[in-house]
Image (cartoon, rainbow, N blue to C red; front, side, top):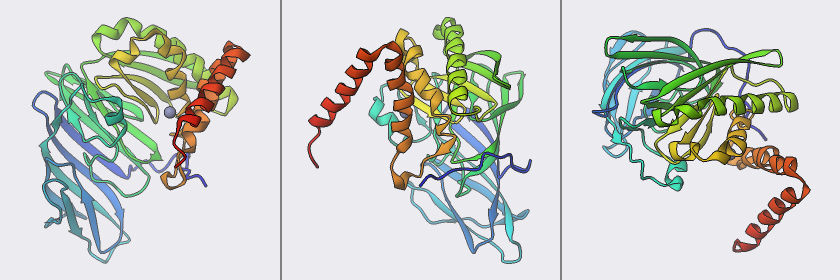
Length: 337
Ligand SMILES: [Zn+2]
């Protein structure tokens, strides 16, 4: 029933090696993707509207790129030679991203968003065509260049981080195969704390807008409590890092090894005792054991039961009963169909 990705470490060569330069003020992106694909007659990939391919190589030989989509849905095709069982592709592309609009409502932010940039924050979600998809679960190395005042964060283990003149470089390595890459960038203040969760060492980080920087310690304390709770209850935390990232959009997203929570939402005092625990738990249910979308989203129910409902049980039987009655009332209000 479940689409489970292997949690064992793979070979050190990532299936996608992606280098991206993003100018958040000008909304420009340029990138080079090196990916390994299995043999076949062709490789077809999409990019977000506004992005276009510069050059493509198959096994170190430059090849023509056939455009098979339109401006609203750019798609490209590369012919693959027959003689190898796998091919290394190198695709260079660039273009312009939409401006991120903080006025988008929560319903918009849960639906499929295009990659968007602004100096207040940039969000390039999984599946939005900001990189060529390998077409399966994959490991990756992501190198991001931004201006000095912008800090990038993505799922995975941070590698080399450097500031040279006005250019900031960050690397994230994901050696568990996952579904896709979400990239977030903003004018963040970064705080870090290394904690021991049972026998494992986990590095916690907050990437907060400057007006939220004072809240970081409280969030790091709360994240430690939840990671300990669920490690004891379920099993070891699947990643080496956990980050809490502030979003200019009113999001509440659980992403492998991090959570992306709205900047205004993070200011609410009860988020540390409610939503944060829910998003931490998604590292086990949804982003550790993955959901097969064709089978329904079982991870939301299980996460709600083991986080939101359990927190009410911690408060006492009356609080838990009130939550159960609320669910039943909501269900009664739904039309039968
Ligand atoms: Zn959830």
